[in-house]
Image (cartoon, rainbow, N blue to C red; front, side):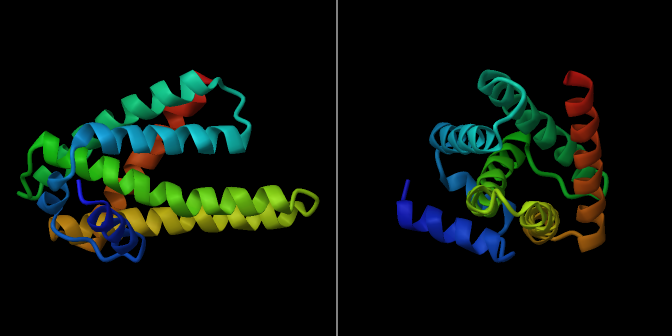
Length: 168
């Protein structure tokens, strides 16, 4: 795996400049999955989650596969057919790219612990940015409509929110 190419692709994704979805299969799946799980662990520790770290990792692991399956179905509905593995690669890479700004906001929020509105607006901004970034990157990567990808991402977020609510 070329480290510089990987970091350039992450920067491109954070700047909403996605390549085609097949492009991201060049990276070995296991190392990028491990990087993703490490970022989940760090964000869980920074959030001081009510659940255990193990629970957060298991949920993240399962949701990665569920997201890839759903998005394969969702984009397949409009004849954008890619393999499950292609969506899995892209889901892991986009998850890494979305964790980076989220972690940056969490670090800033920890420094401004005494000013709660910074945390509120910072968290809200991070959530909106990640939704924007993920949906537009999926639209670019699959060459679909922005609105179609946005609706798919919102459906995923709704399902994840319900699952998190039911599991806690």
